[in-house]
Length: 480
Figure 1 (spheres, helix red, strand yellow):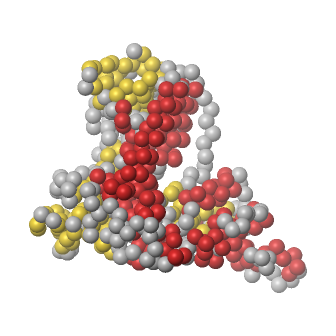
Figure 2: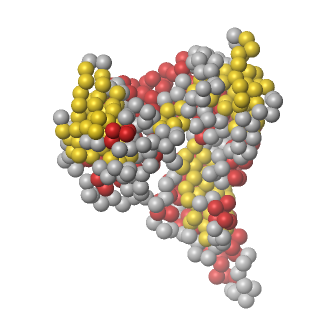
Figure 3: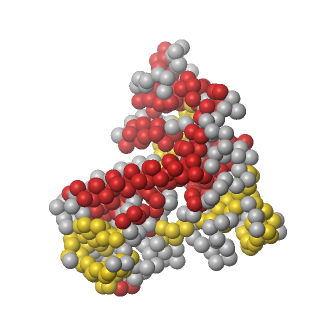
């Protein structure tokens, strides 16, 4: 069977790439391991399950209402993993059905089994019921990643888990050690801490989440410590053993010994390319199983493209979708206008989101910038929702007032960042936020407050000879 395009992997990049090609009236096939695995890691063990679990925790613990109704308020006193998995299963079943329907409606043929290259234009699919050989003019590899599993870590799915296995834990433990302070590790660490688990995070780096604004990270860590999290930074794990049947011990390079009921190992992921027989197609993965590609997502083999987590940073579902579309547009000679400003979201508790450059980057680039900040405890909606720690930070050029970055932590951070994204994409300035009208009370109002805060700082720079009445627009109205 010959196709115009074969897509390996049905995660966000694969789905969008396959459908984009189908809409160009190309004959498309998509391959995944099984009928139940459509959606990839994003849907089954990554983004969707972890964010569904987070939302269930927020609801069942009454986290959002803690500052409104008191610390003792919660929907459910004794939360079990079965409570959390119930909602995850409901969401997964629905999303799998949606993906199957989308592929069917767009005429994409689906094959299920282990895919491997036979030649640069041929691929074999090995399934339990037989063997199929497919050929295509072009390929899109979107096979995603899997957790790194060092040989010195005794994974057993009982006490020691990787980030794909942690959702299958049979009970909520009293103590947990999380190895790895990246996005996945921090998200799960804070989730379990919100459930009352005593969590320790171990990471070999001295700073966590270095791509984020430092003030935002400090706010997150302050909140994490208030939940009882402890951090062991600049520490590496050298050995793991079981001192007894109910506990796991981690030996650190410094000689420290950490004992807990469970261990979550979340120190990195590797490309899931080992079974693809890449040499047959003229390709080779790097030491972490990832594929290299150019700005158009084309590998060193001109008719083979790659997108999503398997090509590395930023490894986000949102950007993977756009990468899939970009690759297909280039492959079939169609124009593609991408977005220059990509948002980044961390679903920690509280959540974090950002777009554009941060203060450290602007300082390094010697850009004269100013900062406007709105603290959610000063926003009416923040008080209503009980968010007393969140903040929105706007970074803008002191000379042109162009918006350079938006950084947010707190309730709805991953939603309201898109307001800043729209203004940045359209070349807007800080005055837009000052002059526009936002619904009240909403979290979006924080943009207006932050804009006044930043512009008021510039008012002090005006020459003394200027007429101060010309700067009335820098003065916050009484209603604000």
